Image 1 (cartoon, helix red, strand yellow):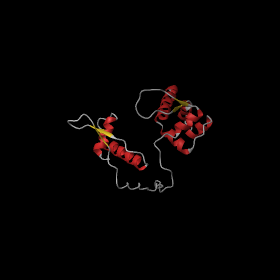
Image 2: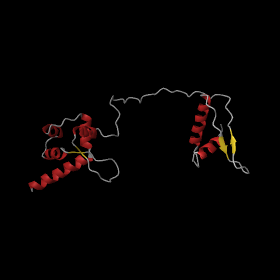
Image 3: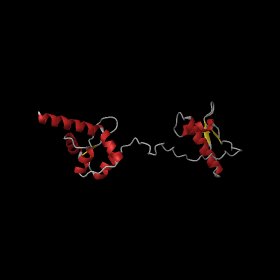
Image 4: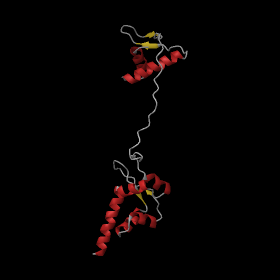
Length: 173
């Protein structure tokens, strides 16, 4: 089967402008059907001057080469022995599992904010000068080091902490 017959067959299926990849895939599928012993499907081809002409594509004499299998190579480990970073949140799945993740449906674009029910309480304790780990332990929250770092870098938590500090400063004055 050549590209001309493949284009015509795809146009019959309703694809007005088939891409090169679609044509190649169609040709491969037809060749596979021929190798399995199925009779080739006739293809209707429009010819100038004639209303319609049915042509059977010629069979391919040489079978295609089998696909080359390449081994899957895992990514190289980092020199310091740590795992590679992920773009996904490590904090959100933990909060979702505990049922403490607040979901605010907004039409903001970008990454969704991760806000937990306990964040304002922990931020208030941190505003008093208590270390973050101690504030988390006070509220019965146990995070591993990567989740703790994610919490420290979380923009929503930073904003809540700054607001708690401002409120604390305003109460003193």
